Image 1 (spheres, rainbow, N blue to C red):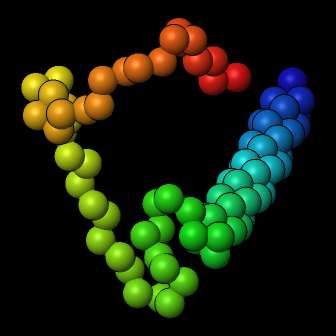
Image 2 (cartoon, rainbow, N blue to C red):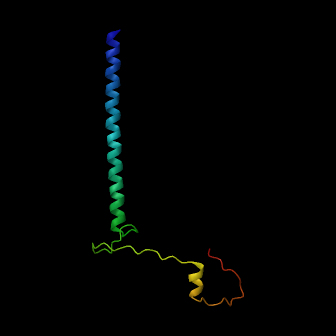
Length: 89
């Protein structure tokens, strides 16, 4: 009876090692894929890079707030069309 317990424990330990190795391999693959995706995004000047392609990092401009009141102060031209709403599709 003791021998079967030792074999069972050994199998469990071996299965735990295999699972840990498989988990590490999955982590390594995920990190490699994430780094490759990041590098691809950086080389294509993605929105997050603020890179002009010269290696100099640009500063991101803050978006200006636009309220209805500030829009009216711009004095937009009155609409003179007769066709109604235009479709954007």
